[in-house]
Image 1 (spheres, one colour):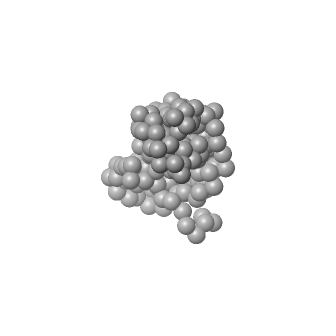
Image 2 (cartoon, helix red, strand yellow; image 1 turned 90 degrees about the vertical axis):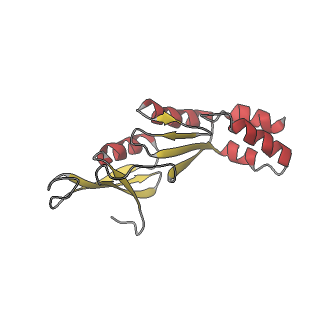
Image 3 (cartoon, one colour; image 1 turned 120 degrees about the horizontal axis):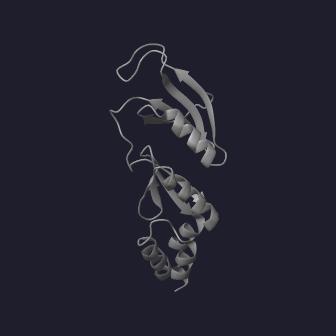
Length: 159
């Protein structure tokens, strides 16, 4: 592993599948080295895939096949800033249509339970508008959405 700091994500035997999906779905993402267990452990046998090094949008990650003891939660998520509706839709649908689950306000989970926030830059601009009324209208509109609709956010922001 070249990076001094990496995000370690715990999987129940599917770290390589997840890393390959992320590399295919997100730009500036790739799968690196795959390491096998040098001995038996509570969650696997010698020779099983233990870890996979990968990057997600340039962020160093390590997928650990640690077994079923721990699950992902919303306490950790990747927040992906999108530039337009097409990119928002593509990423949202990639996650949802491959066994994922829709959430509220631009959140979704992939098939391994990892949370993602697919967040258009236009949404951040709208909910941080210096006009408190405009920001609140955009925020209220977002609170009614699953996948973010940029046109609806901008319409709410302008009133």
